[in-house]
Amino acid sequence: MTKDYQPDADSFLVVDLGALSENYRQLTKRASPAVCAPLLKANAYGIGLEQAAHALSAAGANVFFVAQLAEGRALRALRPEATIYVLNGILQNTAYAYADTKLRPVLNSQTEIAEWSRLCRTREEKLPAALHVDTGMNRLGLSPEEAMRIAEEDELLKNFEPCLLLTHLANSENFNHPFNAQQINLFQKISTMFPTLRTSLNNSSGLFMPQSYHDDVIRTGYALYGGNPTPYKGNPMQAVLTLYARIVQIRTVQAGETIGYHGCWTALDDQKIAILSLGYADGYPRAAGWTGEKPRGMVLVSGVRCPVVGHISMDLMAVDVTAVPDSLASPGDIAELFGKMISLEEVANWSGTIGYEILAQLGQRPLRVYVNKNNAASSE
Image 1 (tube, one colour):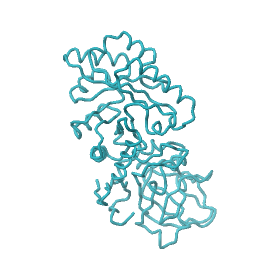
Image 2 (tube, rainbow, N blue to C red; image 1 turned 135 degrees about the vertical axis):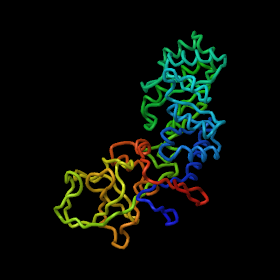
Image 3 (cartoon, helix red, strand yellow; image 1 turned 90 degrees about the horizontal axis):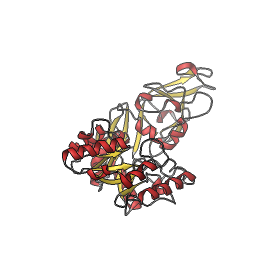
């Protein structure tokens, strides 16, 4: 990155809102004629709810999904006219809060349907809500049998406005998994019993499945933020986030000396080590450290991939920069943890996790630097 964007901070996360908007436009084009609805849960996947909502709204988004009521309230304050669905549904005695803030709950059980119906009957107002049917994820949602029974005989639906029928794919990243077809076929069967409702099945990866079900609302999250929706192929999305940390110190470790807690990594030769001001408190996975069993995490220092060595601490991590010329690795210089040159998927593989988790666990300590297509930047 250019020095113009480098803030006076130990670590910082550059968020390319131009790339976010472009990813939304590409996904919208692919989803057409369906509505492309961004997921803004978990602080917009760690990049910042306010900034993401503004950029995506400017790019044309007006239907959003969040996970929790508090997220819905925060988004409603930012986007008064948007359609906002709350995936986790109604906790007991919270229906009034959804109605008061014009949020659309995703009803996940007969109990939630009854509570929403009771509220609407009391207020004498048919308020919209979505119905979630479980087709095999076994998390939230009505069972197929419950959904079919409700479609045939439940009087509760008459008290409110069911407006969307949705489900969640369990294996969309694996295009050839036979369970995808099972879920799609079951959802198609159930949706015929709700002929007036729009449908929502696909997530980011589901949108790229060759056998994808062409529904009405596509819920896009990971791909929107630069994650690869086709993990066995090249990433068609632009990188949105790049995480940087500064070198605090350069030190020489002699052959036979260990690094970090528990001394689990031992230098085989005299090696040049850079200590970075970033650790697991900032959201970088502790499991990415190389403890001697096999190389794991890598970071980019002056264009050179350098292995992370030893356990990652709460605030610091050690990187072997022996291969980097002394003039290109000094205290105050920056290292890229992930972004345009090191992908989220690589870090996830090194850490035994998924890119979604890395985004969701990004700490608040790294300064956010927001960049737009006009190369202007602001930090928060």
